[in-house]
Amino acid sequence: MIATSKDPLVSIILNNYNYGCYLKQSIDSALNQTYGRIEVIVVDDGSEDKSLEVINSYADNSIIPILKDNAGQASAFNAGFLASSGEIVCLLDSDDFFYPSKISRIVEAFANHPSIGWIFHKLTYVDKQSALISMDEPKNSFIQSARIDWRSRMKKGARALVLPATGGLCIRREILGKILPMPESRGVTISDNYIKYASLAISPGFLFADRLAAQRIHGKNIYTFQENWKLRSEINIKTGYYLRKSYPEIQLFADKLFSQGCGEMLAEMGIKRLIEMPEFKKYLQGFMSASMVAINFPKIIIHAIRFKLRRCLLNTKFLISE
Image 1 (cartoon, rainbow, N blue to C red):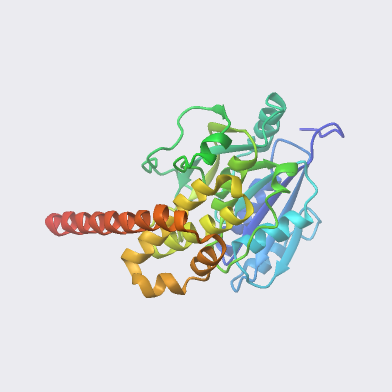
Image 2 (cartoon, helix red, strand yellow):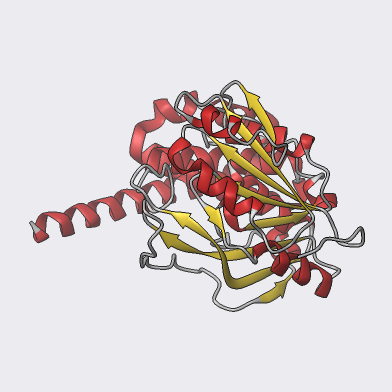
């Protein structure tokens, strides 16, 4: 597709940490779009594998490389956005890849819906060799394409939507600029969940049921389709705290995430680990009140009990199957 100056520039921010074996396919998928006016920013977060060799092979200025010390996914998002210029920003994890028409479809959708600030689309699932695999859709996942405005529901503490992973997130610059830079934490404990929920809190958007990118399931996924309860509880605690801090208008939604994370951590790792969490302490220091204690602490206990019961049921089913 021949680009013109009237076409919006689209920034693709690709974050990478030790996924050199998949990185070339990911970069090439971003470069080989049918839409012409793009910039591809590859942020390497201190990889120790062959990732730098792959990045250095693109010596033709086709990508914008950012090489930094390891500081976590959130820091990679922040660094990539700072280096970007696009009116539309699309995110991509380096073990995943875009389909060739993705960007043209996204640009068209934004043009057809000028009032929206973001588009989140579905993903296909592939294995290590990029072959399609069948995975059960998460409960409460959206089925049809639709424009939505979740802002009032979030203010009322609505249940979190099940939204796609990083490769399905496309956001107008003016909206993402209100979210980034985001709080940073090593690993993925401050992750794209913060970006998703903040986007819903700021602007109406579009849930796109078409699958425009692939998410790779390779056994080393840290979070997706993994029962990593420790990580999940940390993500919910930190995301809940920082959303409450940055977007007080959605405090009920943020409190719900925070309470769920605290309950899971309490059940899985005990009270000592919970009270050691810096965000748990900050939450109490910043938002402690009689009403907060009366409302949220019972929810934490309820979440802990539910979580314990769920784990017991899963273990019982496993023993019976054995």
